[in-house]
Length: 113
Image (cartoon, rainbow, N blue to C red; front, side):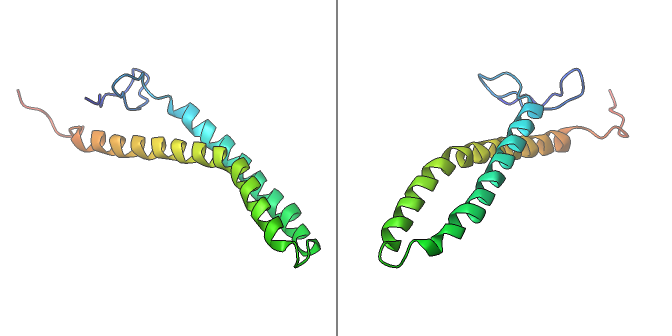
C-alpha cells in the first residue's frame, strides 16, 4: 500500500513497499547529470562523426555505417536507459502526488465531528 503522507519537512515523495521514501532531489540531480551527458554525446556525434562521413567513401560506407551504429548504440544505451528510468520515477511521483492532492481535503473545508 502506498503512503500518501508528506515528510515532516513538508516535502512529498512516495513511500513504496520495501523502499524508503524516494529522495526526489537526488532523482532530479541524476536526471540533470544524465541529460547533460546525453547532450554532450549528441553534440559529439553531430560535430565529429557526421563530419567524417564524407571521408568514408561509397565502397566502404555500408560496413562503416553498420560499425558506427553498433558501437555508438552500445555507448548510448546505458545513459539512455538511466534517463528513461529516472524520468519514469519522476512521472510516477507526479502522478502519485496528484492523487495525494486530490484525496487531501481542502484547507478551507472544515471537517465536522
